[in-house]
Length: 367
Image: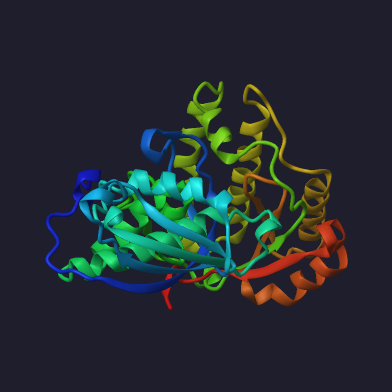
């Protein structure tokens, strides 16, 4: 069983003065939702997600070793980095990166020895309401691990990816599910071998052809800032009247998905996925203070999907993240009909008619 201390390195056997790496890492959409966490970004319940393909963050990390004289030695005790977003300085992102570096320094003791230039961009609009923290933190973790691999050339690939997921989690919990593809489990689950609270693992069992190349069309209902951040929402689970039952339900639903992934039963898949989405929002509506992140158009879309599915028997369903946007999930073989339905009936509920076509992807990629 892994512990966090397994990721604290021994002495490095190599050195490097300067260089750069570049990685892309995708967003992901949870089917069983993680909501509520313990200390150190440990999830209160396990989750499973589809790794996406098109919605991703591309991050370039340039690094140069700091050489400080005695009179300047204080700078060697500090993190040193510049942050560019789409090529321009982005000061308001820096506190989040600073906090991330503070959390991971014990596992990457070289961090204060270098000055970093982090140049990052998203393939989706930043203000689209799609969470970029998962893809962003995963891409940054991959770059830091590439540097550590230079310092420790004996590192195995398994360790490289496990530790990258472990580090990404310390920046944003769901980021640990953006390192690998296609279906990723995060959190201890008795019936899933190798599952861990510390990092995401690729789903280790059979997945039916029905779920290969599954499609996700993201309807951008509301691109504004959420009234309640996910961090605050997670915290509200601590004294939540229904928290314990919810955590047990997540385990039960994940167990159901093991069988569903193997059998290819789309009807049962739809039940679990839609129930999970609505349960997530029910937790928000029944916390204290209570709040609602769905918008009227979110409900219009949900009802339209239910009506369309009833009338056509096409296995299309929805899921939600912690916001108003709707992820429309469907198998590849019904793409044409579902996309026509989206254009005919759902685009009207999207802000500025905007939506993004995505599908299951393979995780982080070195560029």
